[in-house]
Length: 136
Image (cartoon, rainbow, N blue to C red):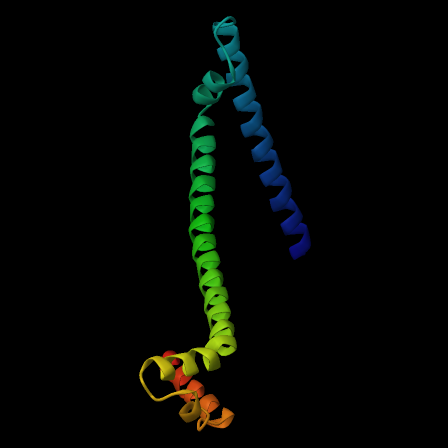
């Protein structure tokens, strides 16, 4: 029983939509008959009230496009910053021992002989501590 009622409602809705479309078509034909030389698509849409719908759809499309562009900018910016951080970490890890020894030499820690006292484990430990400080 309910399916029959649902079908009847669907048919009634389709009939109503068809009547509305028929009325709009008749109005359009009247407008064209009144002004045969002046009617174009924009004027016809304006007379029928459809220009507002087109403007609304275009406005919503522009708004959505703006939001997507804004979000895309922040996503790309975040990805670029993360890539730069990762490249900097790799460069620091590769260059840190040389920079450590160079800094020790420039700070007057002694000559090459005294810098040999720093073992590879000591330098890696200092580099690790510096990396931890960088993360904080």
